[in-house]
Length: 339
Image (cartoon, rainbow, N blue to C red; front, side, top):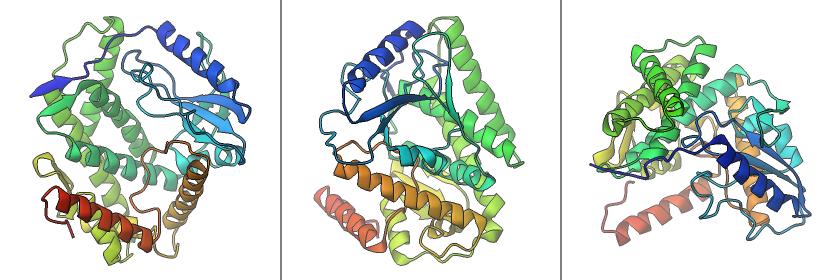
């Protein structure tokens, strides 16, 4: 197995310099109103920067101003989160976050805004974060591990376990044990300035198992309340993303597929059906916020910046277009269409 992109220890000052340079660059754009930070740099060299750029509502062109660059690629795993003031008001419909900060360029963390998540939002993020992480794991090259990406994504397990505990869900020893394991790795990384040995192969397997368990736990908790019937386009869409029905949650990376029970298909069908429960109403609010945000990004030529989005936040017609594009790509590659 090949291990690449090994993490490099960075000091907090290295991060603060990149933040300062980024804020300085962005502040010169007349349509940028503010720059915020989501999350803190608790593990320099593994932690990535999540900057939120607040822009005017409309009437500008963001082409060429996306934040992620080759030079800063180590610090930014993805582009900045470009939002309007109206998006900031409904931030919990877009991201699973409680607090945003003023950009941190020193030892003082200044809280800019705090949000409360409803139980329904916690369920949504528990399921969808786990689901998207498993899709990433299933689609990755099984013979190659991106070390830094693995360490960053594996750290999200701590967040998923915290969500499950907030919801009083049963947490397996496997998931809680992995949570403690990744926290220990990060602690030793900081204490030893990155000079530690990490068994990346074992970490990858344990991480996938923990995410499988968290998705299963979330689905089991709400399965009895799901009676939505998935449309054919939804089923084909999930198949196109490598998801097939099974009895339990399981990732088979060699075949680029993720197995999931019927309840996962019913869960995503809630995005298509009329809202009838607190959970489905929360899903529809999230869907509308995401669609609105996508339109904003497209019209302003900014890079898509959402993470852990639902699988089906758009109409049947658009979903069919996605299926056809995927099928065409598979034909070009000599693969049989998934649906």
